[in-house]
Length: 110
Image (cartoon, rainbow, N blue to C red; front, side, top):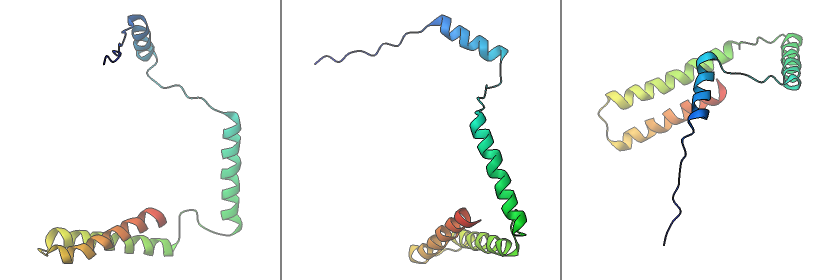
């Protein structure tokens, strides 16, 4: 059974043109959609207004700092125990589960 061969053509003019454009214009061109920029400006303004109206800090509060320190500390403690302590797999499995829960908590809440 014969399969069709994949033929790739090298087009020197297109390659040269693209290389020339990248040489003279090393930056990437960006398309700015005016509708989206208005949307994001409006959204950012409303979110900032919500924080201002409710006297909430945009950078978190003491509860978030405590939660961050606790989760990162729990993850690092379990990680260090896995690396340093010469335990069998039965004792390392709960530490791996604790590390997974702490990492998920860091990723989802912090």
